Image 1: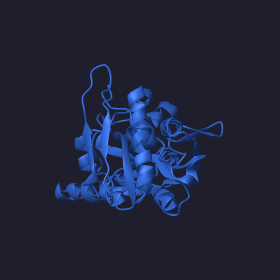
Image 2: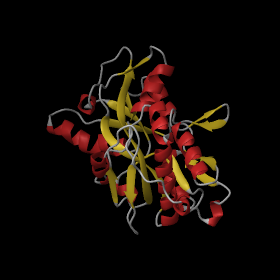
Image 3: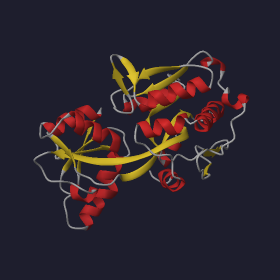
Length: 288
C-alpha cells in the first residue's frame, strides 16, 4: 500500500526533507489547497511541457506514434490536477538536463535517478523508487550481483548513475579482490545496449529493473534476467529548473492530490513500482 508523501521545500535546496506517514485503508494526507495545486507560471498555463526520453519502456515510449508509459501516465495525471495538460518533448537522456537548463521544457519526467551531482543541476520532486537488474544471453553465465561482472563488459545507457558506479567504486572492489575491472560500454538508449548484448559486443546489460523485465519478455528465450534482487535501489525524481520553486511546489501539490484521490497508488501498482523510502532517498542524495 502506498503511503502519502510530504515534501518540505526550502529555497536553494533540491530536496529538503521527505517524511512518510503510515496509513491503513485510506491516506491521511491533507488535500492540497487550490492555490498550491494551481501554482503554474504563466508560460505553461495552457500546457505543461515535459522532457522525456521516449526510448525507455515501460517508463517512456512511443506507442502508435504517441507518448506512453509510466512517466506519461503520471505527468498526464499531474497536469490534470494542475488544471492544464502535458505536452511531451522526446529528448535523449544524455541531453535531458541540458534541455531544461535551456528552457526547452518545464519539467523532466524521464526516470531521472536522484543523486548529489544532479541535485546541483536541477531541483527534484521525488515520486517513486526503483533499482537495476542484470540481463545476459540465455546461453551465458548468470550474473547475480554487480561483483559477478568483474572482468566482464557491460552495456549501459550513457549519463546514467550506473555508468559511473560500475567503472568506479564497483570496479575498485573487483581490483581489491584481485579480479579484473568492469569494462563499461555506453549507448544512447537501452535498445542499442540490448542489441549490443544480442550481437555479443558485451557480456551483459545492466538497466532499470522494470526495463530489464520488459526487454527479456520482448526477446523471448534469447535473453534472461539473472539478478534476483534490485541492485543499487534509488529514488527517482521529476526535475525542474534550478530555483524554479513555483513549479516545484505546483508539482508537489499535484502529487499530493493524486495520493489523496488514489491515482498515485493505482499507477504504482500498474507498473509494479514502489513509493519513495526515506532511507533510499537519503542514500540517493549522498550518491555522486
